[in-house]
Amino acid sequence: MNGVDTVPTASPAVRYSRWAGLLIGAVATRIVGQAWDAQADIGVLYAIVAFGLCAIIGVLAGDALTARPRGPVRTAGLAPRQVRDYVPPRMTPFLIAQAGVVVVLVVAAAILARSDEASRAGHPLAFACQDGSVIGIRSWPGVHNGLPILTCLAVSTAACLWSLTWIARRPGDDQTRHDSALTVVAAWGLLVSALLLGIASTVSGDLMSTTCDGTLVRIGAALLWPTALVALVTVSWCLFTVISPKARVRR
Image (cartoon, rainbow, N blue to C red; front, side, top):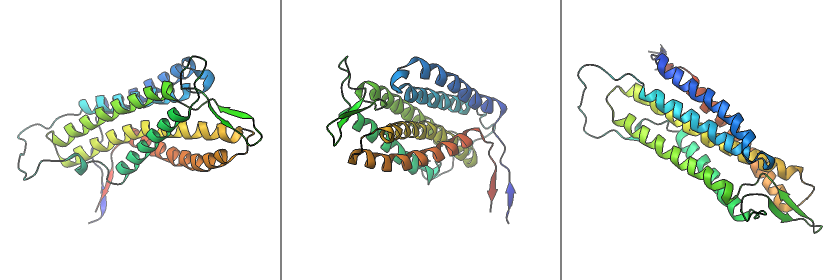
């Protein structure tokens, strides 16, 4: 029978923890964005990382505050529960693909970036135009700036995988496990998609603002702008999932 079945929403402590993570992340975004290499626009990427990490910490802390079931726990089952049984089946591969694009862009940036006056391969990308002039892209991250980004992404991924493993194996009903896993995946996806949005939008914006009419500029802008738009939609979905109560329609 069709009908709306509202699943009990998260407890106030869980909701407060998620909102606290987002609010602290917003404050950290402003502080980091102003303090870290803002002149080269790389501070934007560090600010995104700070916001994403705070959002993940808030979600993981909220999950730790989730009330455990009372009374006898059913242990019947022929096979152990797997993480893949509880994560969103369509959005999870999509977010993993976006994480792969982030890694590819950062690695490519590290390979192509020009070393600065301090011999750090983390500042402008320089390429020659058809008229012989040299154009530099200041927002292009390299090893110096990209390595911390990839490190934070790896640490957050490991933390979310650990949390998802615990969610799959802990006592409780399947609906609660599905809801908790969905929120963790959304928090991780918020970091991934926001990073992709920041990298794609800033670099493509710089490419389109140059006076160099080269093949690299046209290809880069044609690929990065659609990528930024997809990431923007993904950011919206992840943010809504983190802050929204759980209500489902069962059939």
